[in-house]
Image (cartoon, rainbow, N blue to C red):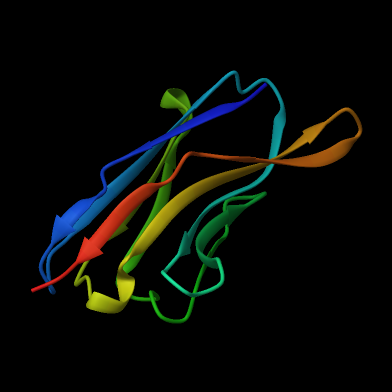
Length: 119
């Protein structure tokens, strides 16, 4: 069983920066993909950024150039550095690990951390 715990959310002003962290416990499976998603009020969940097998990264169009995803394998931790935050970045951010388990792929999710950008 994989347990993911996010931290780093908060209330900031437009133009500010935040870094989210996601610590994975019980990670004994091979990782296929890991990433950050977000859900804003009244909107569908969307991909913010992910790291796929091999280390390549992908970013949602609205965050490209402002957000950076990274990982510390030794610490089982994934980060999302968010710069020049805008009001439209307000959402609950979730980390996700997609792992190989029992011959198939399975998703694990964190509990979410709130990011609010407001002047």
